[in-house]
Length: 182
Image (cartoon, rainbow, N blue to C red; front, side):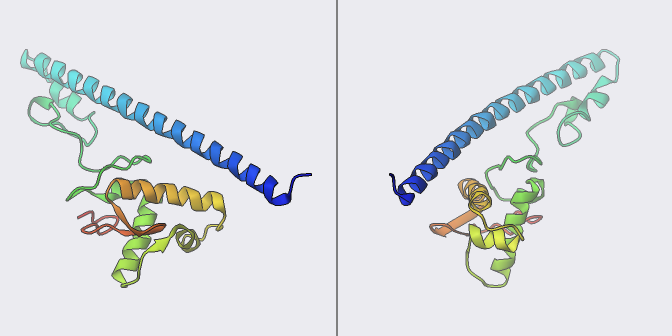
């Protein structure tokens, strides 16, 4: 008869494999989403250009077409010059750069940034994901802690957070939290 610890290890290994598989699938879907959004943006720009050409022939379609782009209006002749500066309100996390507004991040990411900004403001040290879960009033169970860890690691990879010690997170230098990205 196998030991209880051996059985627990088997179940833990199976759960870890499932988490790894789902993480890989999520990464694949994120990449596919980014490609689809880029294609959508290219088609939107193409529609803008056609509207500009048609309006030059006497119509006024450039004014109407420019308002459909993400971020509101386009530049001269209704053509959008670049991707909007604010992050999209989905679970995507853009690479942090000076002046990037954190208010476009999803609510979960904004909560993480807010609690860490409060810690920095109060002169307190980095937080673990268990401490974050507790601060958010969540049940401190492995699934919730791992979900927070995944989000925190994504914020570290994109430059929003720093991980001065393994599993401990704080705001990256020059990041001031939600609403004050620079």
